[in-house]
Length: 400
Image (tube, rainbow, N blue to C red; front, side, top):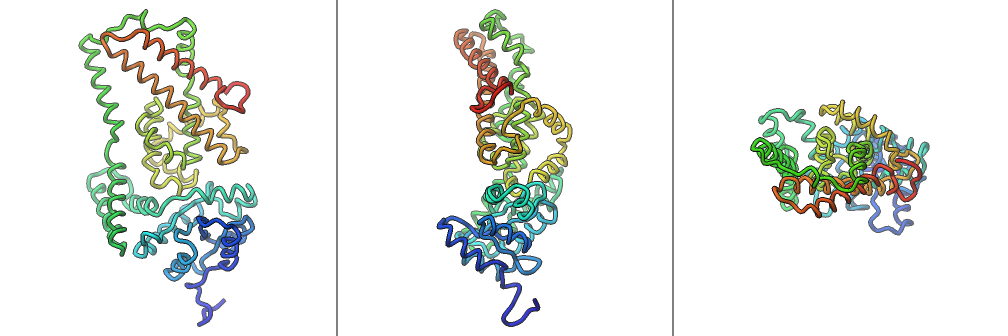
């Protein structure tokens, strides 16, 4: 309706009384109020038991933010997963930034595949909608992504310096001095993670140089008979030399579909990699996008990876992942079940790769313990057999 002294759109939230009732009935002190974009989305969320409201105008105002903070210390802002939704999220960041306090912030969520809450409720049901609205990204990550997008491709020192300046300027806009300093530290740290090689990359480069130098000097000497384990293990090693790759590809597909898992395994993924140069580059970019992953739907995440030059790798991943028949890629499987199985697959893959690296380290030694080598190789082969057969899935049947 029209503005009046009794009705001011910029200070009103659609659906607030019912959202308060849902919060009170839920009995969960940590449950946050959710801000969605449309009135139909509010109705859909509230039907699913989610305490949702919507702004009465085109953008969230300072008055509405203050009203939200009186209900929840960290409301969730839910935007559509398309470009317009991301721009709306960035506008909310700009308006909220000076108002942040240690006990007053926002989290962000973007639904996958460009869906809005009303679509998701109708197509996937209330449990899927409630689960999707828990996969949030903190304010600082969305702020970092906004500034990075403003710079564009980071291909010159000038652009890197420009991003660093923007990040520091954004932190300075926060009125609370302690929080401003904390944000500055966080954003600058994220900048250096994005623009500087990781310690894992440096170690890999050093290992390559060391191995090449030893090979040129004729010092890479091994007795071939000592390298062989049992006949069974030898057969498995030959047959399975590339066999885990379909599951590796499936894991990458899973990470794109469930970016919150990237956060949970970011350090392991960055430090260990997945044993394939192309996939490792893609995964490294996924890890670096941890600062934004929860705020991006799967479609936008894929678009970002394509823009970063991973088109051929993604094509190879899509082709290889279908061979794995990994249950966590089954669209009918629940989100939490899929995430649990994806994490299980990542941990087993990294364990197998760690055993492989331990074998390589032994090979570099002029004199090594043959018994230790055989033991490690047997463990690695057994784990690879499990990964290839799929018998590590508790409910799996048949080859995976």
